[in-house]
Every structure is written in structure tokens, then in C-alpha cells.
Length: 222
Image (tube, rainbow, N blue to C red; front, side, top):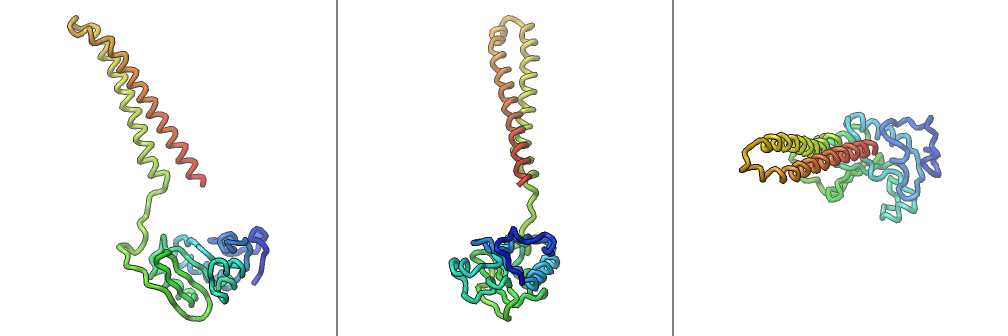
């Protein structure tokens, strides 16, 4: 095991767990990091078996941070040998079975907080069972850019299109009415107002489309 005063001090050349970063494994309270190679090897193996990302809520804890959060004095977290993993994108039963296969012996379930504790300490288990889920896995969601594009961007583009057609239609109607009988000539002065109303609506739709596209791009960079 190797200790670092801060996770930023870990040389990139010695970090061999590609699906995790030192920041994810470091103490949340102090930034310190104890690299437990055995535990991290098993964590990487579990990630490979599951084939999907793992959200690490807590990994290594310094003694003072462990006491601050109410952890057990001899918690496996202070040895860098434990990980609390969110079940936001995993089925708990499948996750626990895979964790046992990859060498994790300590299993703690926390359904109210929606995470599972795994460690390489003595064989034991605790906690309440997770309630049955309708789906074995969280439903796949389209990327944020696609969701936004299907909502605001498309609506904005549609509004601009309808308004543009409306403005053009008013202009054609104005020309037609100008040549019509005198009985309808009184309507002509009002058509300019309607045309500008449609043009304003078109500009608003275009502005909404541009804003949505820029917002999608910004979110995609996060």
C-alpha cells in the first residue's frame, strides 16, 4: 500500500486502474489517498465483469474523516479496502453476486441511501434488503443533447417555421385583397400588423432554437 498526502500527487505512471481516477478513490474530507492495490485490482475486475460505469460514493477515508462521518473505528475504509457504490445504474442482486465472484467478502446493503458497501475484509454481510425492482437495470435514457433537441430545439424550430410561413401568407393575402372589391378593402390596413406579429414570432422561435443549441453544447462539455 502507498500513501499520498493528496490524490493530485499520484504519478500517472503508477496508476493502473483505467476505469477509476485517484480523485474517485481519495478521502472526500481531506483529499488524502491510501492506494490499496489488492482492493483496487478487485474493483477494476468488478467493473470489467459488470460492463458499465460504477459511481463510487466513498472509498478511502482518513481517520479524522471516518470519525466525522460516524464510521466504525476499524472500518475497512481507513485501510483503503472498502467502496460504497451507488445502485443508480445497477441491479443490487446482480451487483452483489458479481462482487462476491471478484473477491469482495464484506457486503453491506443500504437501500434507503441506494448504495452497496463492498470490502475485502472478513466474510460478513449486513443491512436491509433492497425492494424488488420492476426492471433489473435502470432504464436507458437518451443522451442529454438528444432529449433537449427533441423538446426545446424542435419546438423552437417549429415555431420559427410556422411563423415564417404565416408572415409570407399574410403578404400574399394582402396583395390579393388589395385587388379585391372595395367591400373588403377596409381589412388591408390591419394586415401589416398581423404580418409583423408573425415575423416577431418567427424571430422568437429562432432565438429559442439558438439558445437550446448553445445550452445543449454547454451541457455536453460538462
